[in-house]
Length: 109
Image (cartoon, rainbow, N blue to C red; front, side, top):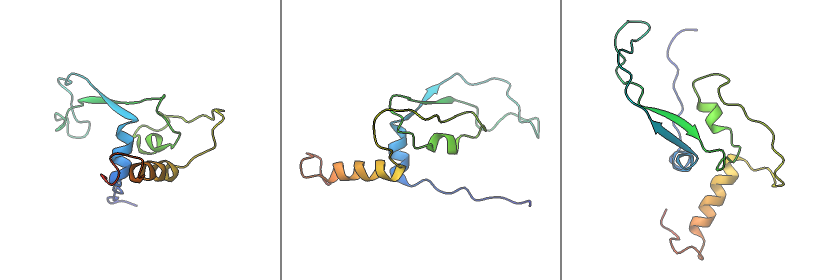
């Protein structure tokens, strides 16, 4: 079927948390880049390359789900002696820590 497809919005808490795990490496503008369909310069030149920090990776698979290049990011099983966690577990833990009375910034979400 033809037509446009809506892209689901990313909840703010996911955007905020994923920023710590995915960084962008600036690169120089690409001169002479042309759009494939209209053979015109791209409106927004490529300005940065995403990089996943493997040390901070929690295995949520979010980067692989949003990557526009099929098969670019693969997930492998790693035995690290920690119980498995879902993305919701990570968010819940971050919120619980932020709201903890022991946290000096408690309630500052």
